[in-house]
Length: 185
View 1 (cartoon, rainbow, N blue to C red):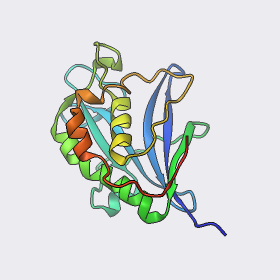
View 2: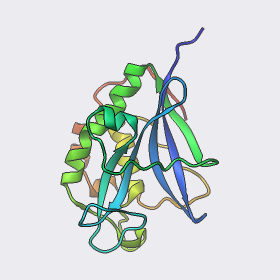
View 3: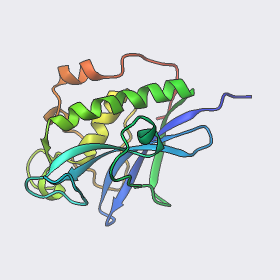
View 4: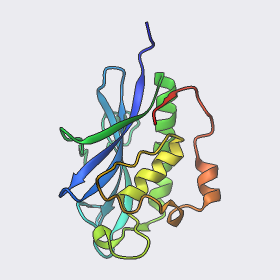
């Protein structure tokens, strides 16, 4: 009998059939959602917006029961999981293996939010897009898990993590161990 696994999956929230908002989901051994990690456009009053405009910031969020358990208790506990959404299991392992990677990324959120990273207006204006997909890529790298690129949808911003952290900063903040969890390609 195989060991019951926790899992981290990549998901793509469809935006009008043209683009995607990529994010991370944490599941327990029964498949229940424990958390979601997002990068979202946020205005100067800390209100989450569906599309960023001039003056908005990219803020990093942790939603779900794991966020509440860790004392984050977000003022707004959103759920971006929808039926039929594209998803890909990218890492599974024991509860300790998976939660240590997830919590490692969560611990970086206050620092990342302190950087006050400008959100690219409307998600498309400018040479270097900084948006939710940039956050998705950065958080995946911090957890040391495989990134999944969803085919068939535009995902601007995925390659611009260097606009938030330098390569040396990213290297120093990455998950420190290579645990024996199962990676999925």
